Image 1: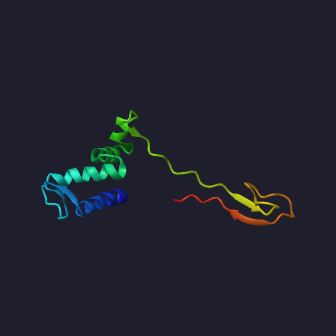
Image 2 (image 1 turned 180 degrees about the vertical axis):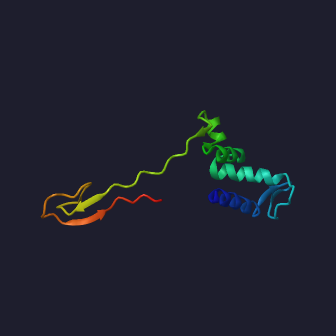
Length: 125
């Protein structure tokens, strides 16, 4: 929720820098009740996230990734958000004649020299 609020606040702050007004681009701060403020937010949202403001609202409510431009391309409107990536596997690297040889388990030979070990990451709670 904090991430969503921060991104919305960032978009609102950016619209104060320059906006499309009645006379073209204006650098003044947006006035309350100005009809161009919503259009500026919509344009910034489409440029940066490829989603409309309504798509963000529907996505936050449903917990899915919804996009009108994706629907217009013939794809489905809402998709499941991708899950977290798989944790990296353990890797044991040993020196050899050319490049290092890496294995998922310790190599059983006693004369090989271990030059690197990447442990599997512990799950975060």
